[in-house]
Each structure stands twice: as structure tokens, then as C-alpha cells.
Image (cartoon, rainbow, N blue to C red):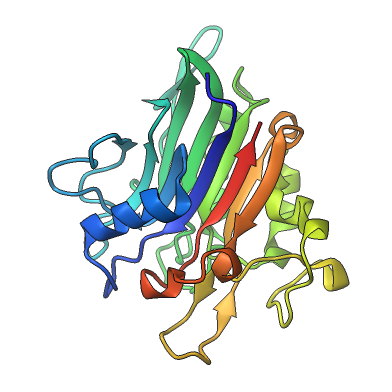
Length: 265
């Protein structure tokens, strides 16, 4: 039995990568040290996950020009992919509009389900497949396609994590609709306000993280677009939140995103 569960999310950056894939996996292990991590814009090495890791992913990712997708990976604990929800008299398959953007897995500790993790990438397209540059259409839609999960016996212990391509001010309507809490916002009072935060909804008690830099210039725009959400039962077990370039100062040399990390007792 592990005393602490570390859940993280990180966008690995597959377009013009800044580090070979195998080295990025080593960076995860050395710098983030998660038990479970949701990776977006991610790939698994051709030979499979590195030693000591298990992973759930869609080979070929999201397809076409996006040969990358969402990966849920773990060490120290077991993962079981969730592809359907058993109801009293029927089975509901979990089918998504953008295969490869969403993965769902039960996290098992000692053979018992600790929680269910949803890895989600906010596809920057509208429902008619027009490029829009944000996840305001895709994220609520993809979560809505998981309605059966949120109404199932798993509903009290669910974590949703990933690069949503949304700003903090977009989050309240989403978390309220699906019975989730934004863990960065929940712990905002533990950190100083983030000067110049974009799309902020918290004002002087901001406490957000810089998780994305749009380019390599030191003056490039930075954003908070990566999140970890959780249901109430898990919120009560949260002990610490870290993330962004403040806690991972070399992240920009590896990707255009910095991790977000949640520790649970």
C-alpha cells in the first residue's frame, strides 16, 4: 500500500519536439516522479512503455496529421482501461468524437480501485471540425460523452486531467456541470498571485500556474491551460499542488508546457 499518490499531467509536445521521446520519458521519471500521469500530445516509444511503466493509449494517436494523442501511464500502481460502463440492465460503451483525445482508466492499489482517471486533450476544433484555437467546444462535449461514467458507481472518485486549451475563467461552468473541482483553484490561497495571469477568474487570490509558453522567445506569451479536476471525496484527500514553470524551471527546455501535479494521502 502506498502512503502517497502522485497524479500529474503534462503535454509532451510532439510538433517540433525539443528532446527525443525516450529522453522526455526519463524527464518524467526524474523530474515529476508520478505514480500516474496523463500525457497529452504524447507518444509511447515504438517498443512500448519504458521499463517499470504501464500505459494506455491509442496507437497512431488522433490520426491524420496528429500521430499523437492522450496517454495514461503509471508505475507503482496498476491501470485497467475503462471502455464501457455496466448499468443494471445494459452496458454503455464509452465512445468519443475524437478517438485518441480521451482515455479512461481505473487506478488499482493492492487490487482495489483507488480512483478512475480521465485523460483529456482539449481539441482546438468545433464540432463541425473547424479550427477554433481553443477547447471551449471540445472539452464540454468530450466530458458529456462520458455521462455514463459520471453517473456510475465510480462517480465519487474521478480525476480529470490534461491540456484543456482553456483559460481559468472557462473552468467554472465545466466543473459545476460535471460535479468536479479545479484543484489549482481549490489551493490558490496556498500560493502568491500569479502576476499578469491571463483569463484569470480569481483576482488577487489568483494562485495559478504558468503551464504553457507559446514559442521559444523569453517574451513569448504564457498561459495557464493545463488542469487537474477531481470529485469531492478526492479533494478531501489532496495534500499538495505543484506545477508550472515556477516548480519545474527547466520545463521550457523539454516542452512548451510545464507539468501540473497533485499529491493525495
